[in-house]
Amino acid sequence: MAERTAAGQLEIAEQSIESPRARAWRRFKRHRLAMLGLTYLIVICLAAIAAPLVTGGRDPIEIHPGRNSWGSPSWEFLLGGDQLGRDIWARLVYGSRVSLSVGIVSMSIAVAISLVLGTLSGYFGGSVDMIIMRFTDIMMVFPGLILIMTVVSVFEPSIWNVMLVIGLLGWTGMARLVRGQILSVREWDFVMAARCLGVPDRMIMARHVLPNVLAPLMVAATFGIAAAILTEAGLSFLGLGVKPPTPSWGVMLNAAHSLTVLERYWWVWIPPGVAVLLTVMAINFMGDGLRDALDPRTILS
Figure 1 (spheres, rainbow, N blue to C red):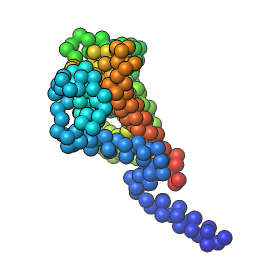
Figure 2 (cartoon, one colour):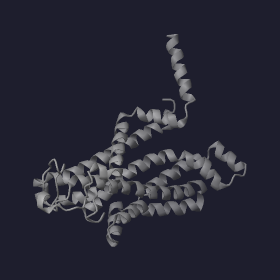
Figure 3 (cartoon, rainbow, N blue to C red):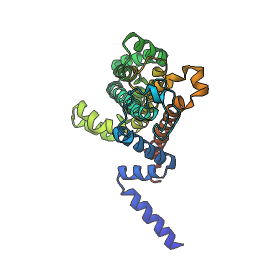
Figure 4 (tube, rainbow, N blue to C red):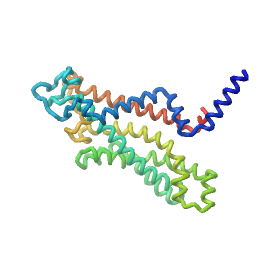
């Protein structure tokens, strides 16, 4: 009994001297679904990077009308062909580049905006806080998807417009999250001590305040990437996103507009639909794992 008690105390002592990064990684690894999602995303990213090798050098926009129009899956064309004879497998792999790029780039824009506005609002307070938060409230009043569709329809559909619009309109929730965290952090003792020592505000925000906000922001951004991928797929499905013949999962799903395709040519729309489903689920699992790993209430678990 005494040996078990001593072993338990030793384990707690080892965890207490463990670095925050190592502790977070240890807790993340215990989340099986999060590790499964991370493994899947690594495979998808490697396939997207090495797309020419994965597809055997096939061009995703090359047309094979004579031998592959509505062609069913075969050894030559693993997932068959669409109405123009284009290789579904090649389009699926190359389309992962577009969908993942939209999620990452658009959320990078949103995170940058939310960090700037949320930090200014939470740290300075007063009239600065009131102006920024009222502007945020106004942005949150508009239906997000409808506003994105309206803005995208005004300009020529392209991947860059989709990235920019999703990023510029997807920062509101994260900005409020950053503000709430900073309202708490700015009252902590080490921040007050830095103020008393005359440290400039920009250094306090960069070195003391922002590092304590990044953990919840990372979790929110992870879920935001999944939402951005779904948004891009929806816009492309409606013809307002990525412009054909550029392959993306949403553009491929656009073929499901036809009842004939839905009933007879399942290989045209099921692969991109499954890819979107699995990718979004994997990112959400990762978000759950990050939330548990970075939760300060489980610091010694």
